[in-house]
Length: 131
Image (tube, rainbow, N blue to C red; front, side, top):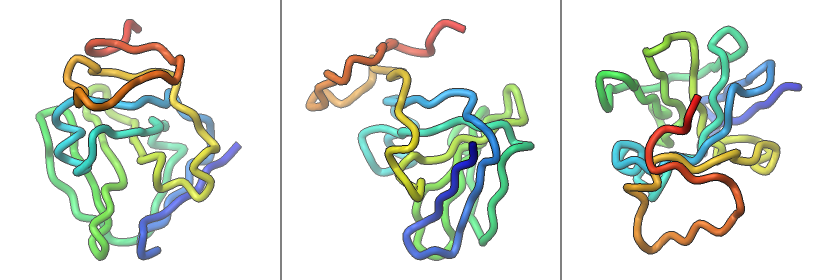
């Protein structure tokens, strides 16, 4: 299976040539601020299965994570963890078919916004899920 997507203006396009490692909704405060939204719904892929074209800007949001956005329209696209390396997270909202992947859990719900009700039936973890 493969997945494709892009930013709002179309300048950045991406493709994943394999199944994701996991699909999660992160409610941590870093993801909230980095995306400008109440959470970051993302699929995590192996870097060797992932490619993109187009200019992005990047910045670290922690010692662990570098973020990338479209350099033209500013859409937050990717998160690149460095521990362990070799993975890339991509925003589910940027999928060409946004319902192609469904989140398997919510993480860091201890810092979710109080006005968000989680009633989708998937597991919830106060912080990271168990391995």
